Length: 346
Image: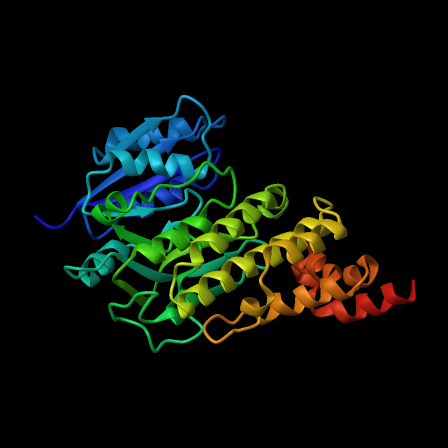
């Protein structure tokens, strides 16, 4: 019998996309799957779609949450009941290449804890399809970890859906998601990377990610920027016991998350400019931040410097105009400089 793969799919109000997601799983060339769908109190017809698919495919297991738990805790519910040798958390608005699990199972070795793969990003506004690959490829197809190869953390990514884990590894290291309603992946990615003795990075694009769809998470996640602050406090604490090179990549990573999300929170008026400055000065060790030997956080560091040096209006002009256009009007990005010149004259 070939290894069993547990596919965990939290479902909440995705009736428009769910069929494509489920079709990509049930039609996999690799057949030994259990497909655990967590109905997180959906209010549209997603629950009926799940029931329809469960009737025609006995591999589908539906678990109904008694209350809305959010993405992270719903994944936990799936991990708890999973019986597979390997566990993959798939988002219900994305879809897989049909040979995804065939490829992934074949790459697992006896001592492999996790495999990280690449994906295709489908922009629903511009209709552009882009292969989101690694910044460098000298670490591919090897069993590596964050202690022996700290630079591999640059390839790791916080996203759950581009990784598949050995289930025993998750249980042994108590790798369950926290109760954050948003940004739950960030701390989890750090804990998983620190626990893993052997990770394999492969270049195959096995998942299709739906980018820039209506209902963007930008506004939602900036409402939860305090989660990033709590993760930063945690990372500062645990990093003290890590080797210096590992400490550097972990802190550069969380500092970059803090900078980017705080800046977006300021833009959307979730944080004042004074609060952004205070967060940077309180939670960022600037000496670690600018030592980018293993983790290139140059953009974040420039923003860090700019925030500490600028007044809020100057900062808005230099960053947020571009951020606004890129997020909400990507088709106008090429005209950014023309628009900025006009604004400066106002």
